[in-house]
Image (cartoon, rainbow, N blue to C red; front, side):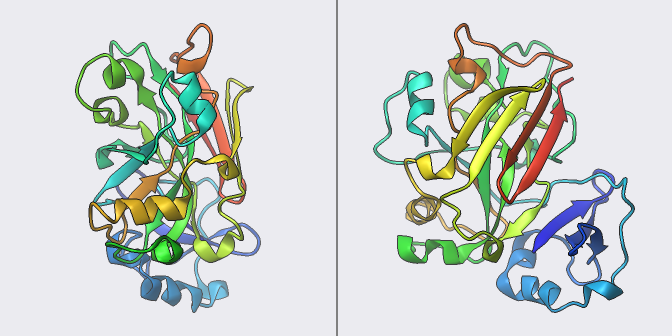
Length: 278
């Protein structure tokens, strides 16, 4: 299933894409795509619905974040060898984990709003996963059984806050609108091999990032298992899993986002995003 949240910010309704790509509203079946509403039992109620009987959303509807109110928005850094090289950082021996504030989350076509004084905001196309069932101390072989589905995340990063202001990376990762997710939450059964998906990102129509999840240092299953050693992952939590090479920080000279720039990005099977910087 491809699940969406659509409508105005803070007033999103819930939908599923039908066979013709139209959004059918499922707000009567689940309260929201958050917490236990992305559990297997909740998703099964949607699978069992007769889509032909559900109302069709208007074509012009804004798409909001595909998941609402995660308890935790976790990110993995330096998970592609070439990205670690371009960041002038060593290849990690264990996943590098940090947090993004859940308040950074925005819709896949919402504007990215740079704060006053920001001069080093950067792009990062990533595949994210949404936890569907509680995971604590799980084996890697079983880890993806705890995942409800996958989506695109643009891990927008203000590098000066991240690197030059001391402390932890969360400061450069958590500005409002710096975590676009969606357009869809694609359930796990739709993706034949999550470790063989292409990723790409353009800025103003120029290709900046091209990669494949096959090039990850740590697989998605490994990441879930690893994190579950240190914390209890709960339904609705989001884990975004690192970016391939081609970020602005790694360009020579470094090149960062400017107001008016347009980012477009996508992942095989997960749709695409488009954001204007202002």
